[in-house]
Image 1 (tube, rainbow, N blue to C red):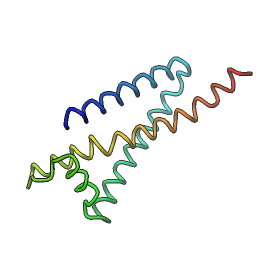
Image 2 (image 1 turned 60 degrees about the horizontal axis):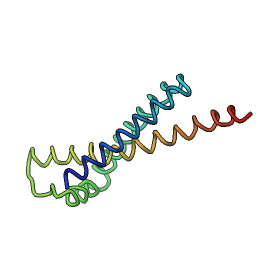
Image 3 (image 1 turned 45 degrees about the vertical axis):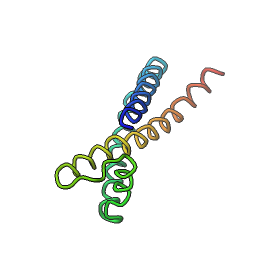
Length: 116
């Protein structure tokens, strides 16, 4: 199961690196915009953690721990498992969503300029 998660994360990372480098060669000034989107995705991740902790008493993270098979721990090991779930399962979709939203905004003006 862990190797499947690692393979998915590796594929996502490679796809993101490819998209960023492709965009950098098309429109170099867009990198600052992408850094802003990355900062936005980190803030959204902190919002998710705050909402999950305060409103639902870690219910979403506990369900993810059960799905990943990491729910039998106590103490420090449980905290590390929760951090692994939050960093490895929750953050990548948030980051990828912000990246592709930004890519949609950036590639739309580029394609319209190239067509005219």
